[in-house]
Amino acid sequence: MLENKLGIFNSAELARAEEEITKRKALQLFELGLLDTYEVGTFAGLARIHQCLFEDVYDFAGRVRTENIAKGGFRFAPVMYLQAALESIDRMPHRTFQDIIAKYVEMNVAHPFREGNGRSMRLWLDSMLKTQLSRVVDWSRVAQDEYLMAMERSPVKDLEIRLLLETALTDRIHDREVFMKGVDASYSYEGYNVFKTEDLAADGERDI
Image (cartoon, rainbow, N blue to C red; front, side, top):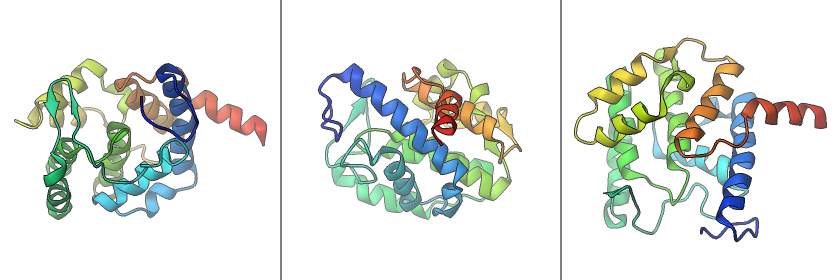
């Protein structure tokens, strides 16, 4: 149970609140064009995305984690090597699709934040693809089980995740519907599937 700004002490309640709040923030990133103002392909840019998504939920939003973490038996970069890893990732090129996926895989191994890495990094990945290739991933076309298995194997070889994402690329880089469906798919990989971004957007429009 993570300490949070909402004063919530129930994990299910926190997950629900976190999903609603951060999906609304993700939509703001898109609609206000903020993603286009952040550094592309750097940890600094990723940290801005993470901060925007999670600043209303966690004090650590946008900050490098200070504890070692693991998931499913896989240990992410140890804290003592994390800063060096992030500096190395910053130096990696992101000119071609292959470059971009390699950089994405290395950032996933680093997992720089205490929580919210995957959701932030998929937006970060799309910002690189959009800037360099005028493409983004249509995440609604990427099956959860295939994605998770490919990412699990990616530190050894990134060919599988590269081919999987390549087939889901779209040139609809300014399409609101593609973005919203992509956010929902991205969140579902992490088990967050109570709210649909489209419904949250409609609620916001009614409140205006």
